[in-house]
Length: 428
Ligand code: GDP
Ligand code: IMO
Ligand code: MG
Image 1: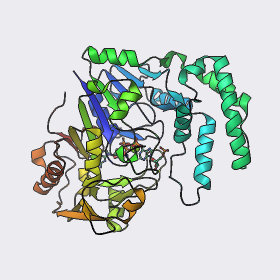
Image 2: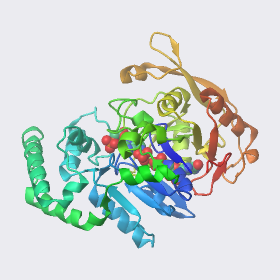
Image 3: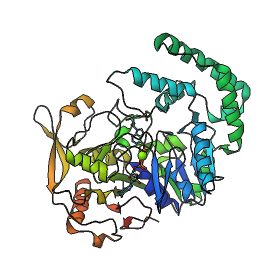
Image 4: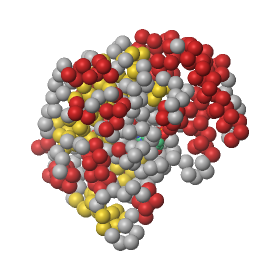
C-alpha cells in the first residue's frame, strides 16, 4: 500500500490517462492536482473510447474515490458535462469530489485567454483557450473565486462584481470587445454551486489520513514537465506545476509521502501548441508518426507536431521529478522506421556540445540536436505482452533509454487499449 504519481515527461499527451486507468484498478483514491480541462486523457476499453478532460482517468476503474484537489482550476460546466457523458454510458460518478479550495474558471477567464491569443499576431502560445492561465493569475493575485464561494451567495456576488469591474474595463478599453453581464454570470454560477454542492468537500485531511492508513493513493498529472511553468520552455508552457512537486501544493500532501514517481514518455516526441522543439521532423517521417500514432489533440483536435525522442530534455524532466519508474508508450508506432534516432546532446550556437537542458527558450531554437542512431524493426509489436516477445532492436531501444537515464522502464505500452501493455515489474 503506497502512493503513486503519474506525470508526463515531455510536452503532454504521453499516454498518462491510459497508464492511470491501468493503475487505478488497484487504487483507493485517484487524484488530479493541477491543470484543468485543458487536459485530454484518452482511455480505450475495448473499442470504446473515453476522453477525460477534468475528471481523473481513474473514474473508469477506481472502486474508491476520485478527487479533484485544490491545485486544479475547475470549469464547473465542463465538470457537469463530463459527469453526464459518463452517466449516459452507464458509468457511476458518485465517487467524484472537488476540493472546496479549488479555483473556479469563470467565463471572463475564457474570454481573456481567447482575446489574448487572437491578438498575439504570431507570438501566441497556442493555448487551449480554456481560461487556464487567467484563472491561475487570479488565484495568485488573491482575487480568485473558489469552489466554496459558489455555496455562499453574498461572497459570490461580491467577488464576481469586483472581478468583473476590472475584466470588463480590459475587454472594453484594451481589447475593444463587448463587456460581460454580471446578473447572467451570477445567476449561472449560483445555480452551478447548487447543483454541485454535495460534491464540494475538504479533501486534504481525508487524503493524508488515507495515506497514513496505508491505502493506495494515485496522483494523476496533467500536461507535462516541458510545459511546467518553472521548468518548461517558458513562456510556451501552461500555468501550473505538472511536476511531482506540484502534488504537494496541489493536493496538500507532504513530499515525504510520495513514493512511486512514475514518468511517462512516448517512444518519440510530440508537441501541440507553439514553442521550441529541437528534434521536430518536418518531413514525411514526421507525417508518418502523426498518421500511425494518430497524433491529433484530444482537447482541441489540432495536429500534433512530431519528432525524435529527446533524451536531453527527458533527463531534465526525470531530474526535476525524481522519477524512479519509467513508462514508454507508443513503441508500436516506431515499427518499420529505420534507422531510429535519439537526441543525446545539443550543439550550441557557439559550437559547444552540451547534455543538459537550457533555460533559454530563444537559444534552444538555435541549438542543433546530436543524434545516436539505432537499428529499427519491422514486426508489429502491438500483440506483445511480455518483454521477451519484443524484437531485439526494440529491446535495444528501451535499454538505450534506460542506460542513458539510469532509470528502469517498468512498463512498455504497445497500443491504445487498456490491455496492450508489457509490464516488466508489478508496482503493486
Ligand atoms: P495523455 O494526455 O497523456 O493522457 O495522452 P492522450 O490521451 O492525450 O494521448 C495519447 C494518445 O495515444 C491517445 O490517443 C491514446 O489512446 C494513445 N495511446 C496511448 N498509449 C498508446 C500506445 O502504446 N500505442 C498507441 N498506438 N497509442 C497509444
Ligand atoms: P494533457 O494532460 C498537450 C499546451 C497547449 C499550449 C500550452 C498552454 O492531455 O497532456 P493552456 O491552455 O494550458 O494555457 O496552454 O500547453 N497544453 C497541452 N499540450 N497536452 C495537454 O494536456 C496540454 N494542456 C495544455 O497546447 O501549448
Ligand atoms: Mg492529452
